[in-house]
Length: 212
Image (cartoon, rainbow, N blue to C red):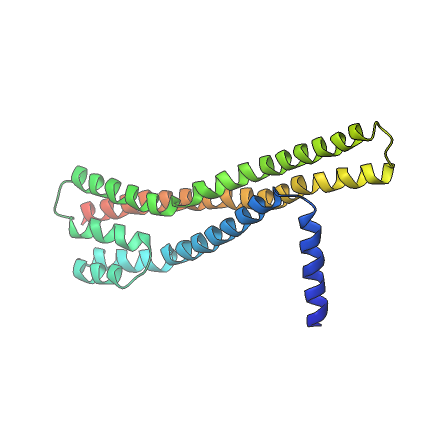
């Protein structure tokens, strides 16, 4: 079983090696993209909190004027929203305009952290197909240079072999780029959802405090 796996790995490496030097940056980009995706998924997991449970519980404390308990609840919850709510609760005696400015500053800081490395994924998703295309163009140039050197007298099988080897880099670039671009847009949507939650629930909390 292990020998079979090793043989498959060796065959895959030999297959990729036929793509030329441009396979190396494409593979390197795939490793970097995988590391960034894992890091972002973990960060977003840590940034979440269960709003359907947390917000009603905190609102209940605020309605009963148990603000200290509400602040304590925020401190004991992980995630971005509890940190934003804590700022609102600690500054509840200040004018609404001041609280909104504090939320804006804190929210911008949190959005910046959420967006970290996401642009890098976008760059990888857009650049790897271009690297693959460049590798294919270079490979095709070499193939036709060989044909020219042989004055056109070349075996069709050799010509076909040179072309498919040249196309390997395009295939590799697209294989990396397609999932990276999909995940990049998913992460953008995740950041937008966090931004909406921060704004929406913070305003609800401000209104609740004003009512009380």
